Image (tube, rainbow, N blue to C red):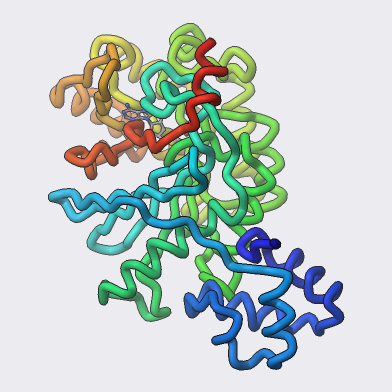
Length: 360
Ligand code: SAH
């Protein structure tokens, strides 16, 4: 049975054309599902009775159950969604003063094997479908609305989405682009593209394609100012070294209006490994010519990790050097650390067979 959550606006229009229906059915159904949170065809009262009947025969709106919710002392919440009997993913809701952000996963596990990331240890199971991607937003948005959580003037609880959970979004390119288009669609969530941020470890050819198809905010996980060190931390760097990555970042911004057009570079602070003043200076040099903002992320430990977090003094010294060189630099506040929901701590449940394949 066709899960309508897998269809973005053009796909849904083709679906209705094949059923012999007019294209305005697309916007009606998108509004019911994504805007109003209604998934029973019988309740979609502006569709004719025969169409409702036909839909219930050929299609469904199938959502993954929320298996577990953990609430952090700081208010952030981690949801475990069961996608199928073998695979579960984590999604994190992060309330802040001026925004309410959802951090979504894009793959079950991850194949990139970054040495400091908990998801890497799980191995890779599969890409998320469009339905799996959009269901994270649907499920958390509806759960929070049902609890009476504060909404914005558009009636939304979630105001921003970051693709920074488990997985490498650009390695699941087509599904991720479709899901982001649904998030931006005025008939569904209507999130402006600047409210979406995609974080990548640096899949260079896909960065170029992203600009053409869905130019959302881009965050790049940099973590090291030299190829030698980055090869160790982010093995993908051997394929796409720093010079090619920085060139892709500059191209991503080229031709856009200057207002808030910067790439966010994420830099995990690892004690005595990438946190020296000399490395800060090397980073400043590397970022020359690329409008940048830097997010320093204090390393979050996880069971079995061999790295340590840089000291607060060291992080502050690093931040100040970048700041004095004119680069906006913030130290990311660790959120949800007490429920293992912080950066690099998401693990979910990755099917065992997949884990064995990756680790063998
Ligand atoms: N694969 C994408 C999306 C994951 S985003 C990417 O690499 O960007 C998750 C962010 O948290 C990335 O910047 C990642 O490098 C960072 N991260 C991973 N493990 C971490 C850890 N243990 N402590 C702090 N940050 C970590």
